[in-house]
Amino acid sequence: MSDATIEVQELRKRFGGTVAVDGLSFTVEPGQVTGFVGPNGAGKSTTMRTVLGLDAPDEGRALIGGRPYHALRSPLLEVGALLDAAALHPSRRGRDHLLWLAHSHGLPPRRVDEVLEQVGMETAARRRAGGYSLGMRQRLGIASALLGDPPVLLFDEPVNGLDPEGIQWIRGLLRHLAAEGRAVLVSSHLMSELEDTADHLVVIGRGRLIADTAVADLLAAASGDRVALRTGSRTEAMELLAREGGTVAVTGRDTLTVTGLPAERIVELLAAARVPFAEVGLHRATLEEAYMELTRDAAEFVALPDGEVTR
Image 1 (cartoon, rainbow, N blue to C red):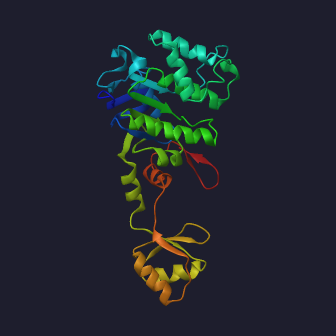
Image 2 (tube, helix red, strand yellow; image 1 turned 90 degrees about the vertical axis):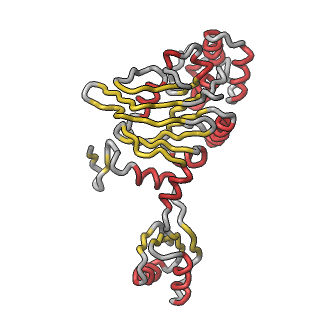
Image 3 (tube, rainbow, N blue to C red; image 1 turned 135 degrees about the vertical axis):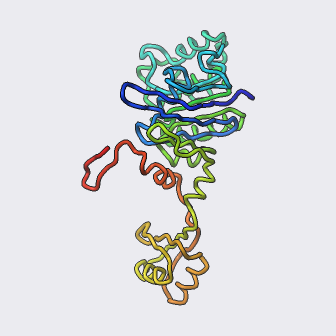
């Protein structure tokens, strides 16, 4: 799958007086799941629509395997996408929807049955789409994306409407698709899902690139040299460690994070002062913590303490 890439090059897109995407550049490489995240209004949907030829860029290019979408000879065989699971004719049966897509690209009916089995929709395939739950629509949309066995895949919020079993399934599916050498771009607002799934992360805000990094590197940078401490004597521990030059933050009822002191020194100080503690170890930041830090100044809407909202 040598053509399994998505390239966004100096992309700009304006809608009236609103700049949706502003000089955005990144590459989605084959063989990994790339998470695509940013606050509401950051330009994620516009970028994905531009990659798929649904919006025309004002400047720059969006390429799939080195070519713009409109130049692909057999799009379904080169790129699969799930952008809007609700975009189904309600009176059409699920299998008929896929048969129509397959026929447009010369794919045999057996391929329809293969992807229906892959997404767990065999028993519901002959029901009309108007009676599908959101989770079922998501699964059918994923089946549509997989139909042409493409090297490039884009999914916008693929876990929406899925139950816990479905969420676990989509995690495994995304990792499997990437392991096959495909380029997989996943837009999601659930950082916990991407932390368990994504290898790489592209973060945007106000249409501009904020970060383009491996998830492991981002988590390491966000974790820094902080030490996590669990103690039932929180106040005593805070006072002691602050006197010794540590910067202490409360993270829970009985948990603290400490910077400026190594874990070994913290253990020595607590033991010498007979301050009881249950656990001391390196703090591992979550992807949500890292993301919030990156996008703090890039949100379109920010909640104020009294519940008001400002832009």
